Image (cartoon, rainbow over all chains, first blue to last red; front, top):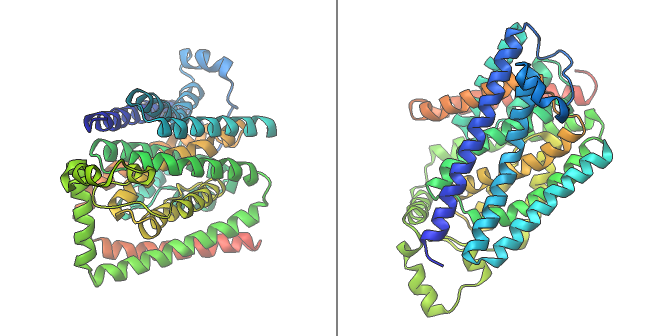
Length: 119
Length: 294
């Protein structure tokens, strides 16, 4: 393993976090402008997340579409970082770190299962 | 419209304060949303988790590119914080709101006391420990060869698992205690909507022997997974309000950016004492809520 490998991985993951965070916050910012511009209060009852309506809400410039897509982006970015690390560790032959990254993905999946089972 | 703008301004203020004082937004956002905007505590925690992921993502990306955060150690420990976050996320919906408010009051008082201690430590500066930390930090930036790690490894034989998690200038120890502390940090994060840095940083620095700057940077990296694991549980259970998330997240993001650019111009000692007063007042209000008199 060279010293350039891990450093390259860390820089790549850093860039992934930057892009994920800025794009997600950008979407949330658009949703916020549309929300405030429409005269609605953030304390009004908000519609629940409905993945089937996401595309039509975005096309119709509905604040909910942008807000939900941005929130999904925010929540998914750290998981994408772990997936990217898993691939990077696999390429550099760090089997223990591949195992750790794989276990984190499994724990996140358990989180999804716990949330779904209880809702 | 007014409420949206007030939330945005409140988010900016918490972002600036959090960034200047090295706190994640959660400690400030939850009281802001519950006490100023009347949100119930669980809804505020859901919003706070999203804010915490955003601020940690922005700063962790910088720390990673500067090579200050320890990616391998962070990932090993975040496996345990994620487990704690799943447990905490499941339990949070079963607990009484007043109990959560009581826990939050204790957390705020703890942070206030910790900040007072830090302010005192600043006054009686300890150059020796700063020097050690600077040495570790510059060694981290310079890379593994800077401290002759490669030569040491050649003499001592192949690196152990702990060696691989260590960095130049420091050796990680007490991994088991670190794992237990990380599970606890995950539970606290999910219950109270904070990043859990107030648990992770002391555990890494004081118990595991990781330099303070590396601990802070690595904790920032871990916060993303900790908070997103609990946020997933909240999201699926309908515990995240997108209308409140909007102005709050945008405000916190702008505030944190502003805070990091103005940090060098602000007298942090005065700010810390002011902030301790705010924390103690907020702890008092949360305690009143917990006792049913707020």
